[in-house]
Every structure is written in structure tokens, then in C-alpha cells.
Image (cartoon, rainbow, N blue to C red; front, side, top):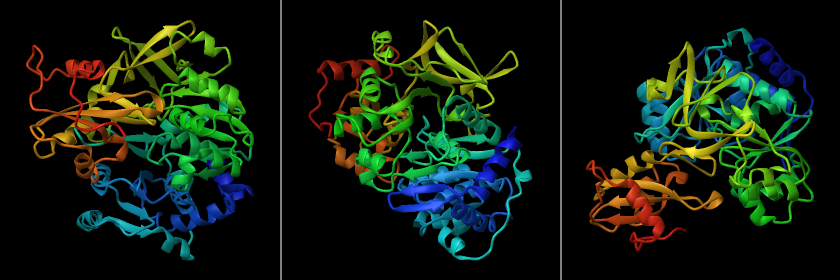
Length: 496
């Protein structure tokens, strides 16, 4: 099955005459992409099953680089240049790459690391300006070798590396190709960071259906997605409900010039008001709600949304995650935690951190999702997290990660974080144990080179004394309750 998958992918790159990349008046064909991939492969053939960091903006050469990396039998490690250099270095030290493909000069901290570790660095444009090419040898691709490494938020303040094998992610892609009514020549909107696992259902089904990527290349495309969708004639939109909420705010009457074949919501709970907008204001032939995480190669559950869902699930306020995808097994613990198993589950985190997230029971390998689920009729409803993980704008965040960095600030002895707000307005509140008035600007300055901005708290409350529970620990539940009932002082900063 894997050999057929890559033979089909290779065939599209090498023979398709369709557009592969569309950004307004800029179009690139699959043939142009393939010729670039052959050039990039000319410097990759000396490596096999090595980790290759692609440190570049979301431009056409970057798409060429990531596919060349995978077809060369190496491991693609996406890293976004817009992230703080220190955060990138934390991921780099975990990934231990042999090669970096980049579109820019590296930050000083990375340059020093590269020199120390003997990492080979290639400037993409220099490679593409050359004449050397090398054919791909698909026999170099082994099912159990790592294809991609993503990074998620970790509870210790360090990111966690999630390696996905070729067998892992291909299972997800094959499920999508079987379940969804893709046509040839679709246009896929691509609004999210390559380092977000949502890239799997965007990148690979797009190629397998000879369709075109249409990425958001600037802030305007992201802030006003309605214009991008219409002008690029997007037909497949895979995104988080926060994007739809923003679209609804800007275009409450919908998008009359956009005809979507497939709309997929994922990464956050799909609330009924957002589904109502999708059903009644967006012209989409099919609307889906998918559920999963990075550890499961993106998705393990799916619900096909219909008009009657608005009444059927009114008591929950959210759409169910639905039922398991083919190849996935599930069980629910006595604490109502969802556990999943199947071909798409990662074998574990890099350096075997958090091994308790994976358990072996009755010769079956299970991933503990940390999500609480309850049955309803013939499907499953997700009731939220059992631990400190939250999702904001589709990004999965360990609040303890943010807390760990806040505690590193001068004059801060402890930090407690939680989330306030709903849907697109969700934000992180941080209560700091400090005798000094630490404000939002100070926190942003401190965190700017440590964490991505979506992990920053937007409200800071300083407490000279922190309440303790009976065990002598900081009373997190009490602090959170006091915040929401208004009895906790909040005179330091307000949400923006």
C-alpha cells in the first residue's frame, strides 16, 4: 500500500500538467514544482533517513523543499522563521538535524549551533539557481522510518517532538481520499503554519488529487480570508473554527463569490453558532468536523455535519466528534478519558518524554488523548481536557509550558495560567506570585524570544500571597473561581 501511495504521488509530480500553486496572478505548475524538487534532491541524495529542517516562509520553493525531503527518504522537520529564535533552537536541539534548508540567513544563535554540530546548510534559492538534478529513488522510503517531526507544547517548558512515520501519516491521507468527495483540480486554502499537524490533510490530499495550494502569504490574507478565498477560487477549506468565526465577523452575510466543495473544521470545538454560519451562509457542498491530535497523525474521528445537527445537539452547544475513522480503535477509561489505537499513532515522543501518554494493554498500543468523551446516541461528544492542555486558535497549548517560562522571570516566584473567553476571543490569564507589578508589556518582552505569541498571556494579575490548598499547594481551583466570580483583583492589566 505504501509503495502505491508514493508511486501515485510521484506520478502526479512528474506527469501532471495542472497548477500546483495559486496565489492571485501567480501560478506554478506541477512540472515546475517537480523540476525544482529534482534540483533540491541533488543535494539530498547523500543523506538517507536523516532529519532535515526546512526553515523558510510559506512560499513556492518551500513546498518544493518539503516534498523533495519526503520523497528522498529523509525526515521533514518544519520550522517557522517567525517563531522566536530561542524556541526554534529548543526544537532544533531535540530534532538533531543533519541538514537545514532555508530561504534566509540564520539567526546568530542558530549559526553558532550549526557550526558546533557540523550541520549542513543549503540556501534554497542557490540550489534552485543551479543546474544539477537527481531522480528520486522511492525504494529509499521505508514504512517505519520517520517522515515528519512536529513539535507541540510541553509541560516542562520545552516543546515535545512528535515523530510520524510514513505508515502513520499515509493511513490518515488514504482515509481522507476514501471518505471525502475530492475532485481533480481543487484549490486548497492553506492558512496554517507548516509546523501545525493540520498541514497533513492539506498537503497530501492536494497532491494526490492534482490540486493546487493557495497559501496565505501575508497578514492581509489571514486577516481577511474572504478576499483570499474568492480571488483564488478556493474549493477546499480546512481550518479551525476560529477562522470561521473571524470570517463571520467580517462577512456576516457569507461569501457569494465562493463555492466550496469541502469545508472541514478541526482543532477546536465546533460550536453550533459557527456551524449555523457554515450551513446557511457559506456555499459548501460538504461540511465536516474532524477530531484528533498531532500524536495520531492529525485525525481519528469524523462527523459529517447536517442542518438537523443544530437541533439535535442543542443541549451540548457543540457538534460531536462523531465516530472513529477506519483503522482506528477506541476505548474510554473509567475517568471517561478517550484512548485511541491504530496504524496512525506515533510510537512516542522524541527522547521518550511523557511515556505515560502511551500504554500497552492486551498487546495493543494505546495513546491517552487527555480528552473526556461521553456517548450520545450513535456517536461521541468531547467534553474538554482532563489536564492542563487547551486550544487557542487551533494551537494546542500546555498551560504549564507558559507557566514554566513565566516563573523564569525576575521577581516571579510562581505562575498559574488558565483560559478565559469563548471561541475566537479565548485568551490566557496569568496569575503571578510576585511583590512587583509585572505588566503585559514586560511579559511580552520577556517571552518574545522564548514562546510563540499565541502562548502569551493577555491578562496579568500579581499576588503578593498565593492561597494554598489543604495539601499546601497553590490553590489553582480557588484562584480560577475567584477570577470568574469577580473577587480576584485584576487591576494590573486588561485583555486586549
